[in-house]
Length: 376
Image: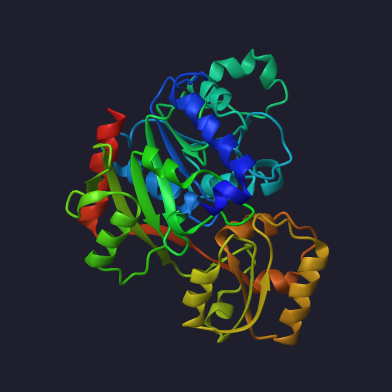
């Protein structure tokens, strides 16, 4: 109710926009190959990139898709390049954005591209020969790439002009949409009821000790009735079936940000942490079980590190000469773009790899069965 009163212009604009798309008053297109949209209705913090990577790991091992050409299309938030660009492993976060570069680094065999226009991006991925003739692609950097058989759309739920084959919407366990408000009062960038339009809902970043009763409670709060935990599915008020899954975060052994990283530092007890993501609370909680966090630098999401930032981190590291300097997996993509980093700082700088996992192999298998059913 508070959104309708204090943010009425924004609220009514969103209502009208979705009404026009839902009733055919605005044109909607589909790509020439199956597409999976991974998105949310909030501003950051739900884990879109780890879930996109989870999808890639799973699909590449799936008999139906493992031998086919899978592509990832992202906007490339805060990149300096324009139009369609094919992401390369030797590129920079400035060129492509930190998240697309992270995905390409982990999955070099997968085509990763960025384009603000998802329709144009899908068209080029499905028909790469057009890149040689299209006027819109004159400034694009690209290499020979195979035509995509499946496209994962990273953060495209608000792009209503493109209708995905399957849509996955993430909801942060620590910030439920039903307790949030539209920006700037809250973190919602879209109407919370839009989660009902998703084929699959995933509550992300759940505590590892989450029990069945909590899952049923979440299902009810999200508007899903008669939730079947075995099928991971329930019914919305209009009678439509909707799948609901729950995932948690798993961290791996720290990895060096730079090749000269000295792994002996990860066995120290003191840690200097710096992060530029929407929510680093889970990471801080994880690291505090093994390290004493001596200092914590907090930067905005997708922050471009300046020399002044690096100097502050270096000075703090100099004050604690035996400590390890830790950052997030996403941040390390932008740190590598920084010039003239001191050699001793490179030796001590590590990141903590992150991945998304389901609570059981059975739930993961159910998820893939559900997804494959939507893609047929």
